[in-house]
Length: 158
Image (cartoon, rainbow, N blue to C red):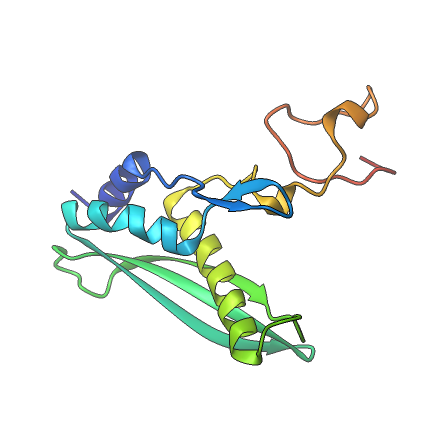
């Protein structure tokens, strides 16, 4: 199998349930750690390797964590060929109850989760990031949106 076929097989087989619960927001969510726990047996079965890397990037005075998920075929004759996905998360300047290293760690976890979501085609449309929007029953009847879409939209222009 090619690296793409192996990644496709893992994407099809991967089950990464939302096993965590946020009491404050009343929603379930998945973590980067949960995704990794679910994908490791599939990586071994398909003789593939996943590497995660974080880099710090500063833009306009803000610090971002750039997480990169790299997928390698361990059986490939091209050992440096990989499929990679990146994601960014911005560090909060301060976060109540956290020191600076914890703020960086939280941004890293968030960025890694979304890099893994991209690599393994995990749909997070129902995740906490999408819950702060107008409930469907409050929308105007003439709003035109895909029924499968839960993305936020502008109340003024749609």
